[in-house]
Amino acid sequence: EVQLLESGGGLVQPGGSLRLSCAASGFTLSTYAMSWVRQAPGKGLEWVSAISGSGAATYYADSVRGRFTVSRDNSKDTLYLQMNSLRAEDTALYFCARGQGRTTYFFDPWGLGTLVTVSS
Amino acid sequence: DIQMTQSPSSLSASVGDRVTITCRASPDIGTYVAWYQHKPGTLPKLLIYAASTLQSGVPSRFSGSGSGTDFTLTISSLQPEDVATYYCQRYSSAPFTFGPGTKVDIK
Image 1 (tube, each protein chain N blue to C red):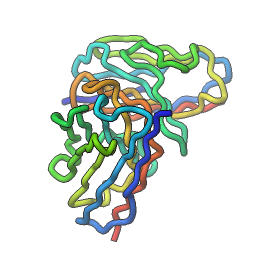
Image 2 (cartoon, rainbow over the protein chains, first blue to last red; image 1 turned 60 degrees about the vertical axis):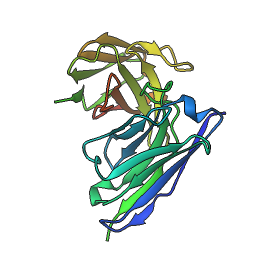
Image 3 (cartoon, rainbow over the protein chains, first blue to last red; image 1 turned 30 degrees about the vertical axis):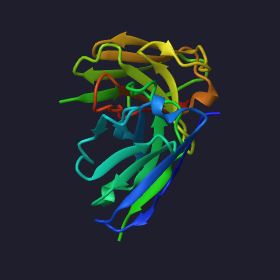
Image 4 (cartoon, one colour; image 1 turned 120 degrees about the vertical axis):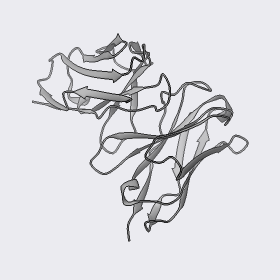
């Protein structure tokens, strides 16, 4: 069974950092693009970042470019999101999601998410 | 400016009604659009990709159409379990933006 399990969320002060992880099982991570998508409280889905199957290509939303870094360790079947200079508006439930193939960026399945709260 | 818009933002319909949600893309994205269903407290579910291809396991009452800049998601006969928010998403190239969502309720 294909599963994605996010971890690493929590409460952090503005300006702080967090690293999210997404552990994949049931498939070979290197053969799929992966992405992070977030949902702020009461808001819709917002695409955050994506990475190709090899890791050679990375993409970011304007709202996080320069502050967030996506990476992957295919040997550990794990996707990461390093989040620096966090702001209150980064407060959200962060989902990881699998693309379709190495460079196709629509998403299925999704994880259950990990909650990030940025507050003093 | 790359945008995905949806209309309406919310709707209320009766069980058995035909429901149509519209998504508009700027610029042209061919047929590189996907649709998702998201119920509160659950993970989002892929319904349709390539504008009109039904994901495996999705009920046939869901269908998609369109190309270029205008797309529609149709529920042919609304069921109580279809109460959710529906999102379109572009994937022709980055940014892989989602639309703002359409909340569907039962009247």
